[in-house]
Amino acid sequence: MQGTLYGAYVLADQANAQITAIDASAAIALPGVVGIVDASDITGVNSGLQAPVFAEGKTLYHGQPVALLVANDQRLAYKAAKLVKVVYSNQGPLVLTLEVRLNIIANLTFKHLCRMLLIKNHSMTIRPNRMAPR
Image (cartoon, rainbow, N blue to C red; front, side, top):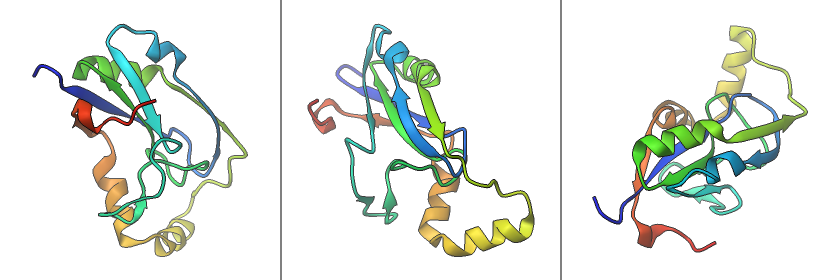
């Protein structure tokens, strides 16, 4: 549809780690890529899920949304999202046992868990009037 922008999530590939930098330069260089939004652009919590829209400085789990790549075409958005490099540091201990995993899950809200299950591998369509000016 004319004038429609498409988004593809950039997902964390490390859990329990500090986000040092997000380098989208390779993705932004592609013709048709409009931009990228992350926690610095959309702060606070999603009112429906009562959880941050994007990881804010630290990833909680593998697959957590870190950013959203916006492009003129859905395939291009997916392709460009894969080019975004997220730099991590200070990775904490990984969950390697069921006992530890259940302890972590007990400390997450139900809505946060739903977000973990629903966000992975999904994309969204963004209308131009919904984009914040940069």
